[in-house]
Image (cartoon, rainbow, N blue to C red; front, side):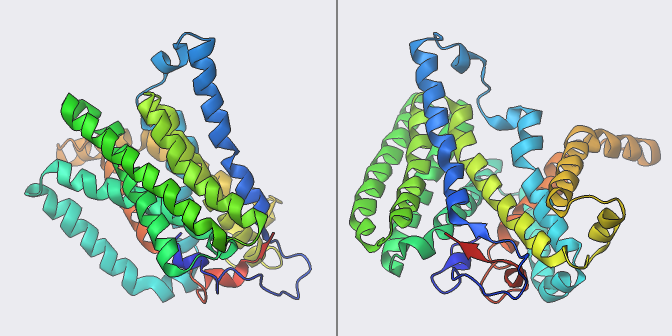
Length: 353
C-alpha cells in the first residue's frame, strides 16, 4: 500500500448505513509495533543470559526458514493477488495497468537478466521492497500526524534510504569486503541520525498523542532494524519490519473482504465459503496461507517433474523465483494505487481511532 493511499484526504472515517461494517482501528495498527521491543528484548537477553545461543542458531535472514516464508513472506502477497484476481470488477478497472507491468517485469527481469548483472537486478528488487514496506507504514499514519508534504517526504526518503543500506548490508554481506561493509554501516548510521533529527523537527505537526506515537513507531521501525543489523542479529533485523508490514496489510484485506462480502458474497470464493459456513474473517488468510505453503513447498518440484517428463528439460525454481517473484513485484506495483482514495477497494474501508 502506498503513502498516497493514506493521505489526509483519504484517511477520514467513512460514513456507512451498515451498522455491521467493520472499521480499521489505528490503535490496533499501532499495537503491531510491539514486535519492536520484543525483538530488542530477545537480543538483550541473548547477550546477557543465553551466551549468544540465539544469535548462533538463527539464520542470516528469515528467508532461509521455509516456515518464515509461509507465515510472513509469501502469504500477504498471495492474499493481495487473490483479492485482485477474484473480483472481476477490479480486474476490469486495472487490466491495462496489470498488462503494462507484466510486460515491464518480463522485459527487465526476464529478457534484461541476459545482459543486466545479477547484482543490479537484485538491488532494484531490494530497493523496491524496502520502499514498498516503509512507504506503507509511514503512509498509514500520515492522516494522524498530518505532516506537510516536505516533512512527510523528508522522513520517508531518509527512512527508505537507511532501510536500503541495512537491507544490502544483510543480504549482500557475504559478497562485500570489510571496508565496503563498514561504509554501509557508516552511511546507514548517518541516515538514521538524520531521520531522528527530521522526526524531532516534524513531530510538532502531530497534534494528537496517537499521531506522535505513530510517527515515532515508524522511526523506531528503521532504527531497531539498524541496531539489530549492527549487532548481527540479521533474522530479527528483517523480522521487525516484515511482521509489522504483513500484519498491517492483512488487517486491510480482511476488513475489505468482510465489508464487501458479509451481506452477500460477491465472488466464487466467498459463495463457496458461505456454503461451508466458514467465517468471512478466516477465508482469505486460510486460502493465502495454504496456497503459499503449497507453492513454497511443492511448486518447484511439481513444475520440474512435468517439464522433465514432457520436454526433457529441467527448470529449477520456476515457482519460488519465477511465479512468486512476479507476484511480489506486481504486488509492489498494484498496492501503490489500488488503495488510493476513490479506488474500488476503498469503498469497503473505514477507520477509527
